[in-house]
Length: 380
Image 1 (cartoon, rainbow, N blue to C red):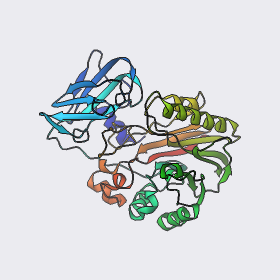
Image 2: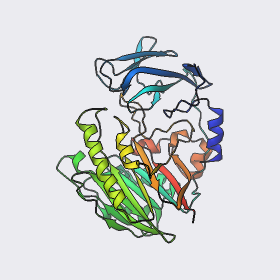
Image 3: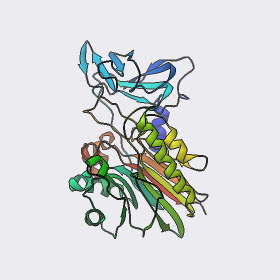
Image 4: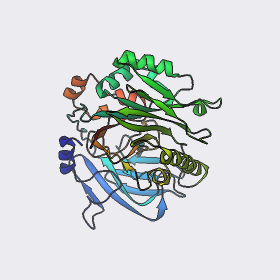
């Protein structure tokens, strides 16, 4: 984690991470120069955006209704009696999975949101980027995709939501044009006839890739392969679990079934290290992640450049607020992270944008998911 990020953590009283260690005992609301914070307690576990009945709270100048009765999902906000988007209020909260405790943050009105300097250079032996590219927008918007990838300089890409018409050959051509070098690609099969069924996951790398079968994976959008890096065999797995739903229902059951498939594949590996990442769609419970993680994987803790948010998904046109849907796990006695972050170009100051050739809206333009970035090194 960058020294700057650690400094931001020290200066900001509350990080929206679903952990409450940074709250003073007995305090339920607080504020700083930019934000107002509220801690919510519930009598039973639930997802704030998928409650059986509406939950209304007041925070600063806003009235916030979680799971509003007219929709039964998402969030609705009003300010001075007028309806506004939760994104206009800057509303974020964690966790976005089922819990009894939540921390909520909104922007102070008429306060300009801060931007930050940030260093994107790789600090380890190799860099892994996991990214849901929203119906293949990486290939459909090559200029934007090229700017982002040139700034990140990945060695391994774990991609999700490539379009069914995207092929390994198309992805290789784009990557070699954008980044140079020789790229190798392994891609999951396209299933069904509807677009959301045809979506594909992929592993792309400048290292040679040896694909490994995921047994009994049915329609799971996942792919795995081994690569030899600095003499060490590393297993990579890119996954995309079932979307939508809440803590109960068929969507959550399917996510847990898919997680068990991933776990079996991970356990069967003979590699010295493993990295599993993708869009876990954790909108119900943490169980799918816990199934795969078990006791032998570690989650990469990556925050946005503001040093306060872990969210990897947002959509200003949606009634659902930002959430941490994308995760990266790793294991192995000789592998460690040296740096990690979630790339949100809107957080950068002008100097950082210019230095890396980015536009402020680049990440939001390309996808509703943000790139999850981790640098790794070997400890042997």
